[in-house]
Image (cartoon, rainbow, N blue to C red; front, side):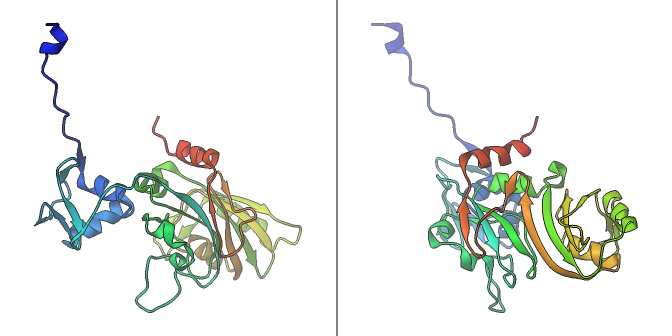
Length: 257
């Protein structure tokens, strides 16, 4: 009898994952987001309520549930662009019954756990990325990766050179208690009323506060690019699936080297 036949078949080692990563792979959002489910005691592991963020899961044996509903990792990942209209809030649901961006997402993607990456405020239009790839969403939102966002801004009076320099150098926003990173400013035409501004962060209402603090009224605000992604010809309120090359470009921006 050959030596190979006498060898015992090795058992497959258990696949262990931190619970927050496992929940993210199930389409519940970024790792930071899923920690809210753990802290609110909505997650059970083999029937026991989970209270520790550092809990690990054996993906071969353990049963993980959210509000008694079984959770399994999503097999297919989706990456979408939504041209968000004004008047929609960036959340999965709203207690006040206001329209949300998820109202514009087809059911087949919602069933797969697709969620917005970051947010645009109610009165801001334009490019909103959605995915069920929780790991990617977490990295794209992390400030260390400095993912750029481009916005088209219309203001009510011409932007002065001195204020351009302030924006480009970074401006202190007392509403947020921080100074912005340096930004790039271009004019969309020669009126100086229509501006393209590229930022390396996505603080809440950052663009609006920037212009307000400099004494300008924002008439229109629209995100036109997110990293390598361009809004292009996506109709308002419509969804477009990213091309594979776009997905690769997006991931390459947040790859650890």
